[in-house]
Image (cartoon, rainbow, N blue to C red):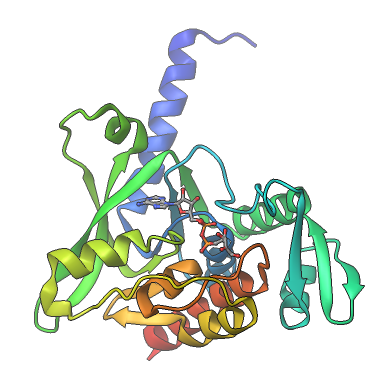
Length: 257
Ligand code: 48F
């Protein structure tokens, strides 16, 4: 077999272009490949939707890899055990109803599950705005830019993606909902900002408040805490898994109506 440099280039450009053509009109855009975004991606694929995840960095996982203060362990509570084990994570019961898992195990198994489900995860892409339509007012897509272009400060227009739902799984800053709240005041979204830590309360409330913030726009994971003014919880990740699953269920319910 022989191949030349030009074949390598052609394969990459052609195959990527085919994917981008499909991505430009997808069912669901998830912003952020952290624990909440990847879990949402997995379940949305299970429910039969086309899913693309845009992740700013060149790696999966958001806050997973850092464990707790770089110690390589993450804590999961009983309520999320079934989801974690469904991804094949190796949990160790350390106290009644409390489990530890290696951050690398959590990261690898969740990432594998999301990709294997058929979700397209595109790394190195930052979402920097949303698309909207009036009457009725709704979010109908996102604007995307190479993270490298953003970092360079070059003035380059983004590309645009249409979707039926956008999930903000960007973590503590709720970046996408914050942009929508600022640029589209008619959405009447008020960002309360995250509170200091109260882990047990936060784990419950993050899941409870997960869901739609405007037509076509949803919050999952720590973005929920930022939007609704909930406390933070540190390196216990069960709430992120349950929030990811809940947002998927809500989107399925809304879109199948
Ligand atoms: O921060 P992140 O892990 O969010 P999460 O899924 O989980 C939070 C936990 O990691 C932890 C915690 C739970 O105990 O408190 O912090 O809510 O993942 C968010 C991902 O989104 C990416 C970011 O690089 C990270 O990987 N991201 C953020 N903004 C953008 C983005 C953006 N505008 N475009 C693309 N990716």
